[in-house]
Image (cartoon, rainbow, N blue to C red; front, side, top):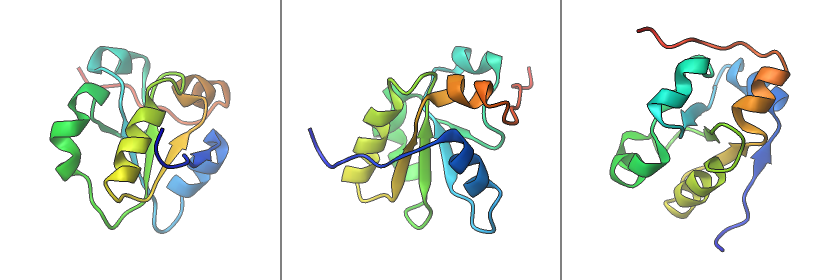
Amino acid sequence: FGPKLAQIRVQEAHNLLQSSKPPLIVDVRQPAETQSGSVPDAVLIPLTELGTRISELPQNRQILTICHSSHRSPFAARRLKKAGYDVQDVNGGMLAWQQAGLPMERPSS
């Protein structure tokens, strides 16, 4: 099953993103799913593309993975952890983020 996965609550994730050394947030949803909004400055890399795009992610920066409801992002986090990244999964995903009333960004169309 791989390495134990570190999870972070949405409020803690939001606080980290405000810090002087913010982590990179990787949204692993499909582009169509982001129409409802996403975390500001998140990088969209659908889970299906993670394997081929993993080299786009910086090794020297903490990464937070997020999806719609925390169903897919743990897979992404485990994969990144195995590849040597410092990664945490955002527990509850965008559903929890929205429910907490945290800032969201709509895609520009």
